[in-house]
Amino acid sequence: MGFLKNFKNISLQANGFFAKKLGSGWSWNDYQASYMVERNSFPMYGNLVRFYLRDRLVKSSPAFFEKTISPSDNQSLKGMTVNRARDSNKFLVTSGEARSVTMPFSTSESPFEEWVPSLQAKLLADTLKIPVTAGLCNVKQAENFKKFYSQHTDSLLKPMMHRSDNFLQNKPY
Image 1 (cartoon, one colour):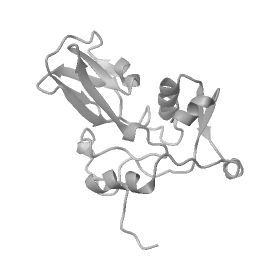
Image 2 (image 1 turned 60 degrees about the vertical axis):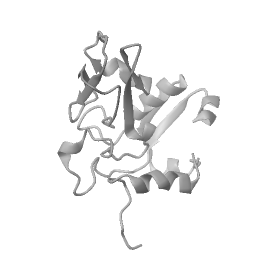
Image 3 (image 1 turned 90 degrees about the horizontal axis):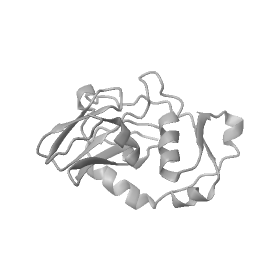
């Protein structure tokens, strides 16, 4: 994402990826498992958030999610357990054993908002520290867009082959 820092502002446009958040056959109650990330058109941070303890306080990566941690007083902990509600990004941190927890975040800010990437725009703005807007694009606008590839195909596919629930499907073309 380093090349994006050169821009003064960014407009993030949904590109017509209107698939359901969960793939066919995915179990709805595994939404907190790190292998059950939601699908969307612009995955950021692998659609995962990592909570960890630093000086007995809960931190997150990306830091954007630190403001969604309950209890908000960020009590001093030796270990933690993290839970989140199914269709929200409110994370409940309680005392537990783990020093680090990785789990998916909900890719939309409400269960009804699947088409406009507003959460991704907020994440990108928080990461880059520049204004980012979100919206829907039409076919005419999409003709003017340029593709940017973030990494080589083999380094992209390798971790996907090791995770149990990914976006790859065995379909004839």
